[in-house]
Image 1: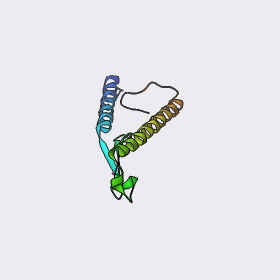
Image 2: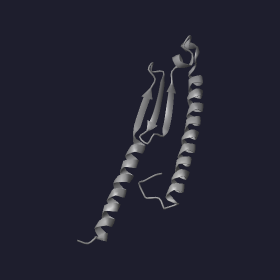
Image 3: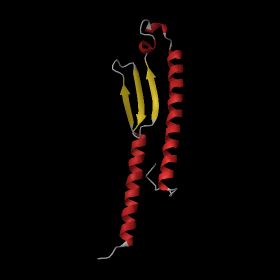
Image 4: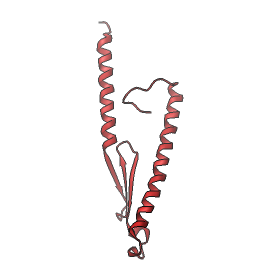
Length: 114
């Protein structure tokens, strides 16, 4: 019973394709986390990457939510989003760098992201 290299390569290609499809599906997915009072909603993709934040006026000024205008809410959402995206990018680069050190710079396998 010998090793059939052709079958092995086909299986590897099938796994790579399935991994790529799973990664794409996770990237397109949206997962929402919400504070107990519903005043803060965070949306991530299925890979855990930050997508957006939504704040309510009640969270910003619980004593007088009507005093909070929509521009203030939008500005806070924008600056928090920018900081979260920057942190996510930095974390991804650190993870990639660490994985390259572990794998000795082996080429990336399609569908598997480190």
